[in-house]
Length: 265
Image (cartoon, rainbow, N blue to C red; front, side, top):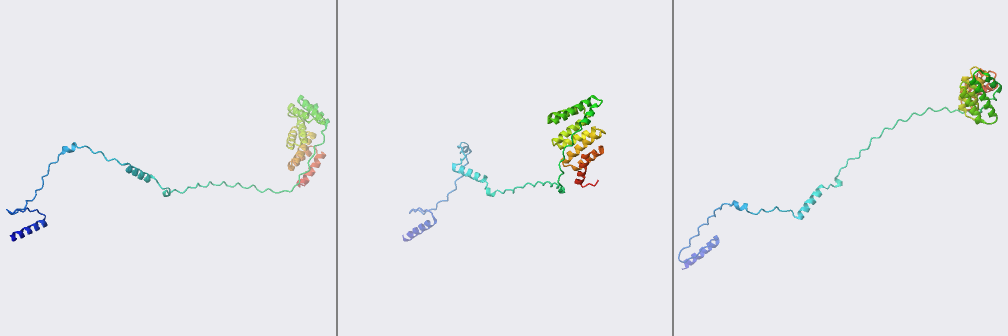
């Protein structure tokens, strides 16, 4: 009995340690259980998958969508500090125009202008009227208008006198006395340029008439003196003396111009 008890205790101990279950039967010895066979593989049923409900794709939850958009926005944003700007291109300076050359320095002259010249002596009416005996009708009409103009000047009516002189020039454009009469009127009006120009035109039309030719050059010379053109005035007064060497006014003006210009003639 004791031996059977010890054997039973030993088997229980071995079974416990090995994890096996031993059924103790007092009438027969305990046989170990046969090892379990692996289950056979069952064939897969494909039809089950065909009728299985299709699982809808997982939708992004609002939190995941917001995070995605936030990541994209952050990726698209560029920090201004990371932008490398190209340095501004300065425009090329325009070439400066070359400075104009300075005019040559004028020679300073401390010359006092000549004393203003007065109008020539009154016209010899007799000689003017003698010109009215000309053969052409135009010249006779022009001389008559000139005489009327001088009479109007004596009455201090310069406006009508000017009209008579201009009318005489229109009636007979070759009448030098008409140009001379208007030149003397411009001289009294202190229009020096017009007086010199009209006197020169009168001289071209007077031919070799010594009295009127000398007077025309003298009026031109006096007008040029008052216009501060002494050199041209000297040339005109010399022409006046060539036409009438004994003209006292021309001789006096010639001496003044020589002294002024420093000429020794």
